[in-house]
Image (cartoon, rainbow, N blue to C red; front, side):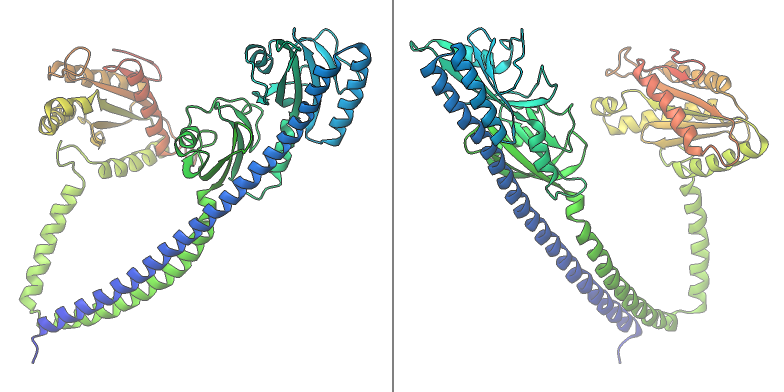
Length: 510
């Protein structure tokens, strides 16, 4: 006959193995489903990037084709008044045929308008300062040049310039033929794409200039993208690539597919929000995993009940009493430890949170003031790096004893370790001025400990403190507002040079 303990062990092992297998299978299936979903979206964004690349390449190619004809006419026929009149008709016809074009223009070697596609020619306008004009004047390159976006001096629209150099018969610079494409032409196409609420698409120049983007912003057009992770990834991976990138524009992590245009120094980016990609997967996984988890709980509960019955059969009354007494002792010890920081001996974060809620409620009922001092040891990470963590612990212990000695003399006052090297003192019935005085005493006492710290300006361990107080009224302020206010003052003290106290009435005191 099997021993009762052996039966309990085998039952427990069986239940654990069954539950583990169920959870493992569900986890593997869920992860595989996630991988499939991401792979499908990688294919989708790659296809979208190719479509965008083709659209942009075609739009620019048509504009460039117009320029090729314009350059050939100008270099062959010249720019006599009769030729200019004929040019205007031809250019107007070309613009009417191509919806992406804002206009086609011809400039002489000085940057003055010779002819354009508009009915009324602008007067006394010179574009010699434009980037595309300077490029052609200083380069003998006869191919198309894609310039940075410009704002039209006549219409105010944002335009993408495509230009070619015009030469004299001897090869010297004679001017520029320019076709301008509406930035809105690309925006209209991008708005027609289904990329979700948080998706994004963009057209970027290889020199790092943002040409246009969806979500559209006029401030984004012309922005320098060279220091962004997106541009660095493009330059690293080459003309075609895919990567997860957190956008500098709005902070959203997206699956980015990018592709260079076949004929021009531009690349497009199609990006879908990772959260939106996985939204359906999350919903399905939560429902499915919830069912599996519930089944696991049922199996675990039944197994636990069986094991429990076996255990009850082999326990004696004396063992129960002994367990009860041990449990009571352990609970008392744990309760004491749960409310005290083991390193500094101050109240811990849990006790601080409980005391803050209680004192905040009391202050609201009694219409009294509750003050808070938030303190942080200056350059403590450097202290640990220089002297070691053991010395850092000893330093915190010394500071904790100093804070406890100065603060907490009144009932309700509480000195606590808020976290890491950050300490807090809660002061009921105290205003900002009184709390600031106490904070200054603590700051001064810590400095007077003369604990060596080679990583600070004056060579000794110091602390910074932020002080604030509230007179809470029912159902308005929240305890976290007092913490945020004191923390803000602490940041001000840090920013002001450290080793100082900042409060609402005293912005910075050293």
